[in-house]
Length: 135
Image (cartoon, rainbow, N blue to C red; front, side, top):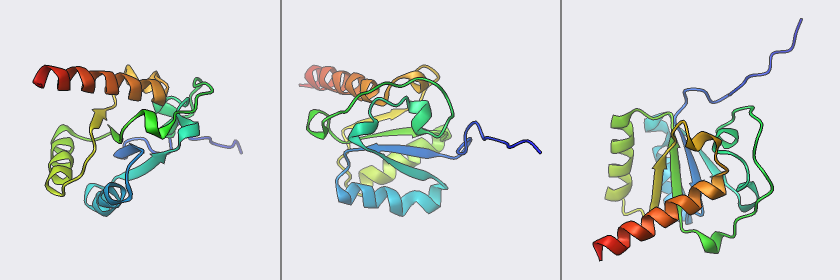
């Protein structure tokens, strides 16, 4: 009998990759897990070099050595495997609950292969540009 290795143990399961969240926001997400059928995965600073796909549980090559200092990037969530309506509902619930998570993104086919730390830096740059345009 051949051993079967799952390519992605979380395929299709809504997932939140959480970065640098204060305990309150982390608790909010954990509390919402059951209603969305989602998993939350806190990304540690030493995992910043892993690709988004690897953090989502895909058995894929890639990634590199990268440690991201939490002080260099504000709290962020990256959503995967959510339907559009569920993304909207989750974000609305977080806003209503008073969550302070400045960086939010949805995984795209392109961003799956990016190291997580690089994705965060890209989101941070976009956030700064958007904030500057508003101000």
